[in-house]
Amino acid sequence: MAYETLRTLLEALGIFRPALTRPGFSNFLVIFCGWVLTSGPHAITQALVVTGVAGRRHHEAFHRFFSRGAWNVDEMGQLLFCALSKGLPPNHPIRLVIDDTVAAHKGPKIFGLGTHLDAVRSTGAIRILTFGHCWVVLAVLVPVPFSKRLWALPILLRLYRNEKQCRREKIKHRKKTELAREMIDVVLSWTDPRRVEITADQAYCNSTVLRELPKSVLFLGAMRPDAVLTAPPAVKGKVPGRPRVRGELLPKPQALADDEKVPWKRTTAQLYGHTQTIYYKTLTGQWYRATGSRILRVVVVRVDIGKIGIRVFFSTDPRSSIRCLLEGYARRWSIEVCFRELKQLLGFGDSSARKQAAVERVAPLVALTYTTLTLWFAKGIHLTEIATPPERPWYGHKQGLCFADVLRAAQRAMLPLDVLDPQRSLNDLRESSPPASTPPRATHRQAA
Image (cartoon, rainbow, N blue to C red; front, side, top):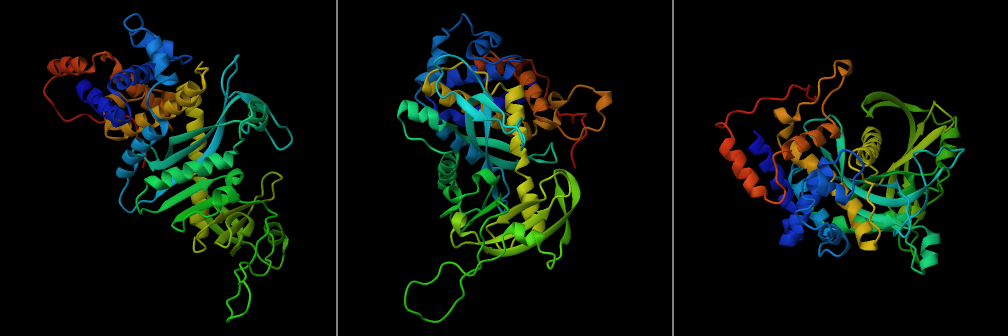
């Protein structure tokens, strides 16, 4: 059993071989395993300590892996994306989600540090700013056999720098939405003709992201209550001059919600793990400022809790059902769970890298580590004894497994590994392993 789990883990890491040189892959293996085995603050030197490499190889080689290594983060993300897409059923759409997160950090002469709004800690009345790195992340939403919810697995990241930083260094400022659209275009260049669905919150629903998206791409997002909507232009006979691209004005979402002549309709949807009753009003039309002449399905949802009043969602497919639109947008929450686990369990913001190349590589590699471990765990490891979580009688309602269980299983699998000679470790395990037998199922309760 120990041999099989370690072998499959090394095979999962072998996905990255085409993107790395032979020495680079050797260094990557040490850093990957050390990062996973670290239980406290994460650092490159700590990775060398926990893997037993400290004193056997000079630490500077592992720092150079990030600051001067001949490898590209996007290429490694593409290799992971190909592995993810191959694991999906042929008729399953590729679901992407985009958001940004702030990793608190401080220190002198560290590239890319700036002051950013912390959306998690801020409220409508109080804005809290955090000093650190801001990352725009594109992740793939995938079903996993050990959890009910979809998991957001990052494949591309971009470091955002605020206007003040760019002005000080006399470089062009790029908005978060521009970085998001760049990543979307990169992923679309990798995809086959399979259907692509993209979900993002209101901050990424504007013309920079939405204009001129391929018609085959479905976008689910949120819009402002005062968005200007128009009807499709009426089709008439031949008339002189340029044809109209917009029709007559339609009620704004807020006006539609306030119109007592239009009754609220009711439906149910599975949102955030619960079946909820939704009251809504809907229309189809153009949001020309953001999406051009494309026809949208717009849904105004009544919010009875708090002071928001209404939320407005849209789909670039006017035939979308209300339930599919709302459930599709709710799947966006998986990336928030991913951010929490990256920071709390994998040290996403812990690195002390200072140079630009190192800063732009360490955090993305940590995110790719998260994706790699999840892929490995989903390929049958969740059914083995190594995935058995600790016994917690007071937590009897837990269903399925979480990333803490994934990380624990990987740490158990790596215990007999000598990262400087993985093949010898495999040979030793194979010689000491008992005859192969059917692996016992883990004792945790599986998700339905």
